[in-house]
Amino acid sequence: MSTNACQSCGKIFKTTARLTKLSGFSVLEVLLAAGLFGIIATGSLASIIYTFTANRNSEETSISEGLAREGVEATRSIKKSGWDKLANGTYGLTSSNGYWELTPTPDTYENYTRTITIEDAERDASGNIVDSGGTSDPDTKKITSEIVWNLNPSHPRKVETTTYLSNWEKLIPVTGTSTGGMLTYADYSGADDTVKYKIFDKHAGTWSVEATVPYFGVPQNRNLRRLELYSSPTRDEKVLLTKHSESGQFLYMQTWNGTTWGNIIQLYGYGDDTNPETRNFDGDYLSNGDFIVVYDDFTFTTKYRIWNGTTWTNQASTRDTGGYPVWITVKNEPGTNRATAVVADYSRDTNTMFWNGSSWSNPVEHGNTASSTSLDFISFRYGQSNPAKGMLMYSQADWQFLWIVRDYKPNIRPLNNSTSWQNKIENVSIANSIETVELAARPGTNDFLGCMKDEANDISCFISRESNGYNWQNITGGPTIAANTDPGSQKSYALGFENVSGDLALVIYSNGSDDTARKTPKYRTYNPSSNSFSSERSMQVLDDSLKTVRVLPDFDTNDIMILLGDDSEDLYTIIWNGENNEFYSDANKGLVKQGASGSSGTDYWYDFDWGHDQN
Image (cartoon, rainbow, N blue to C red; front, side, top):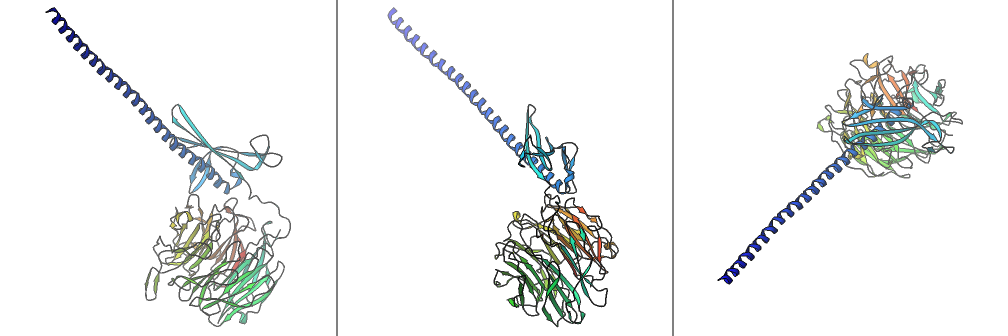
């Protein structure tokens, strides 16, 4: 009995021990699982916190780098308004009316603080920029744009961007000969109509005395209705084209060789006097120095001649465009002997042809229902970063009933590669039918500023950027920049970019409730960086209301010549100072009345060409 009892006790003991052992492993497993979960949870939480911090750091660094770059570009923009505005020191930035300005203290954006530091650069004996130990160069500034912010209270961060700006537009005295700029204009003060001219020395900033272009035998003393002047890039030479009209139309060409006028030739003469004010001729110099002119001879096929500096080729035909030419624009593709001719005809068609250096291509029709043949409804410009590209702006009706035609959408068509056109773009509308159009190409880009005058005498402007597929974009302060321009059929506005930097465009126009108010020309500047217009500003008062205007950028600087024609046939000049972004006020570059006896107030009986230095 005791044996059985012991055996029973042993079984009971073993069973109890086994149960105790099993229970012990279960508790341990729970503890291990809890510990493992804690470790994993802690690691995951740390990973989440690290990822969040890294993402936040990356995002804030990206923002700060953008603000630093903006600081550099803003300072570059300020430099264009005047080198003297970049005084050494530390600053912040602010924007007013689309323009950047320096402020005495750093500026802030959310939790970012920006400091702009301006200091003279230093150069070694070889002229290389060095960090230290060199000689201070007051015509080169070191610009540092620094951004400081706190990722967290104990973790401040900083990025900075540095660049150098130079006063490369500073005028340097020039020796040697120069073609000089030339102003030409009609003069009816005597018994005969004559053409006068003056030479402008842009280095000295002075005008020569007025001189007369020798009489060149215009039949029956017909009125000079249109005048165009062109300057050779390879020779000390200019080409003058003059259109005379009264009981017919006559086009004459002659050259200036730097000293005298000569090589007179009559390009056409015919009896029809329709649209005497139009530009049914145009030309341009090619890269090899030849001058090509395309003109109307009262047939459906325009004619052309080439001047090689010594002789003219015989008259030859381009291609039949199916209508009598009324408006013609010819532009040389920069750096080549190719050119594009745009021909708008009496049937309201718009056609283009390409000159490949020896022959003309077949015409391409872009539009067939322009607003009116008496209106300058075509404009063409080549691009400035890829000159094989370009842009055509023209009128094409959106609505038509019998003879009533309306165009509410500015039409543009990009040129792809010298001979190939993209599809038409007309992605914006204005309230009234478009009458005249004008394009300006921004230097260094393939972007184009386009303005137009409509039947309600409004002037509207848009920007076409290559980066946006050339679609029209609205401009801050636009699109309508004037609501009461001169009601005539002529272009009462003109536009152009500062030719070297491309940092600013100038639009000059008439605007006012009546003729008295329109005696004061108006202007706005366009800032491509902020894509905005300045507010409207007034120029000096003319003797009569402003009718016509030309805006002509210099080839070599950021200065711009402005020609102003008023309703009394007076001609004025004034020059835009591209260094300080304001008009000159001295006796020669400021407002000068150059002529007082022009032809019709709505005609372009004057022109100016800056010329090219031959040093």
